[in-house]
Amino acid sequence: RHYVVPFAYRTLFPERFKTHLSHDVVVLCVNCQMVADQFRQKRMDEIEDSYRRYEREPRVIVDQNLLKVRNKALALLKWRAKLPADKILEYEAILRDHLKLSDSSTEITSEQLQQATKIVYRKDNPNYVPGPEIIVKSLKGDEQNISAFVRGWRQHFLETMHPRFLPIGWSIDSPVTCGSDW
Image (cartoon, rainbow, N blue to C red):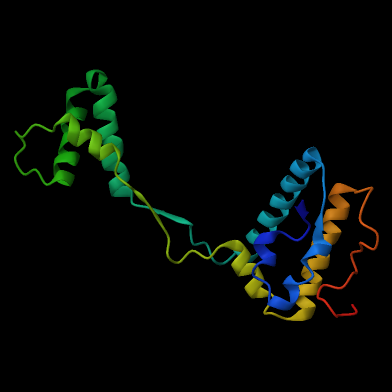
């Protein structure tokens, strides 16, 4: 089954647009499904990029200090024997600071190094808004905007996949909601 209008968008539509979903679900062979998915993802990325021009919130926030601690611990664990002495001292100082070890003579254990390599340095960004939400919100629940959006996806499907066997009655201009005539 292939969703001509990506499911990520359709699920965010107002209820009246979800009831006519079966028109935009078509059966494809496995190879065609893979090709269609690639075309779909490319178009989704293009649409999302055009809407994200001014909003560049990353999905994940990287804590550079924690990443630095993790990388230094990893270097000490894996390549201590090959590192120059001054680098070892520098990396250990960074780790001591993170571990709050005030005495520079205190040895950093391999367990502490192992633990430091497992630091979670990426966090989900609470301000990130997924692309489908931005795009569907931009349609403002307006029937004409949503209808044009759906028809655009139908047109994209025809242009990229050149299907030879569509269900009888399938058309770009088929109604987008039940009970609508356009």
